[in-house]
Length: 500
Image (cartoon, rainbow, N blue to C red; front, side, top):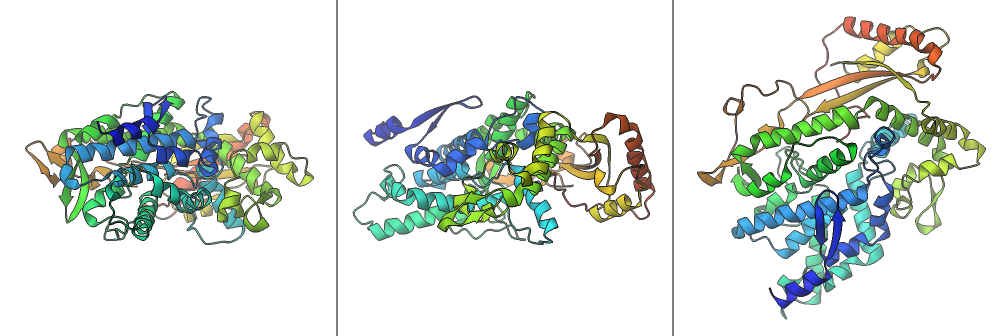
């Protein structure tokens, strides 16, 4: 072992992780962890309101992000060791790890509740058609803010391991600054990769020969990435569910092969069913946990409380400006202060304007929840569902707002498509040749459908004596739905309750 490597390992920090065991991270990543912007993730629950259904599901984006950084390092190092011809540098490894560490910096209170339910509801109220805000774009903005506030570009310049390939008298300070600027752009591209219609990317941070690096943290092409590997294992652990998917086997079999002029991460053909296990695990977690009927209605109640409290939440941001729950996302200084703690802030506020919001959150704590009247599968479009709702006669003493008609979308990650169609494999006899596998080569027992949609109907009245009367609304809705004229729409958009 070289003296430089010995010193590097001496300054590494070891985290005892319940999922991956002893996780060793390099000094540069530890510096990022020890910033207010990253520490904020300690106060954002990974599964949002589902912790009110599954008592153990109180883990946060903080430990998940550390797990993703670790797995990103494990995968890229395995590729470097297995295929030296890829010329993966230590800078490449650290950039991929930093992207894994920072990929969720942009999440708001209760994770997907904020960007998947609260923001769309506020936009509907304000007739705002802009749907461009996503937590991935906020992660990039928060990353920029974090680098600037903590002078992390200077830390990158001083980090010996990060710059050991550039330790040359021929490298000027300006050249080093330019390299680091390019690396920062590369990290941001890894956090939020964008794929065009032709599925080709403008590789600004690295050349096309290293295009495979863009599929490690957030793989928009086929959904196989270390982000999912960590949250599948972590969520199953804290939910108390079994997880049959083994990401370690995929790391051991991963190779980079060329496919249609692009270098892609491929897997041994015998890992096909392990990958189907991965995609089924995604579906199963959505069906049993992420889209749990009680968890979803709790998140809807939290969202209603946030909407009612929005204007009265005051958060100080940059240049002395004040922001509310919705606008804080546009100012990273204010957004750094916005976490799950807003729940307690509303609950304990004496402002009379918060009364309705407090009552809703109080009902959650007392388990006085909206009731699910029933659910059934559907292929109707959102517009058709709205028309059906308008036709249903209301039970006596109720109004339209007393009932919530919610749609949930469940799939294997590629809507109605088989995700394996976008995965490349190789055979033991020819490990450098990328291939696809057809359904006929795999099994005749594969699923025929990869997408399912559910309609759930909730009632906001919590008086148990009116339940049977309200169930008539569900029966009438389902009957009109089944008799509704016109073919059921196969192209239903994802609902606001759907998680990525």
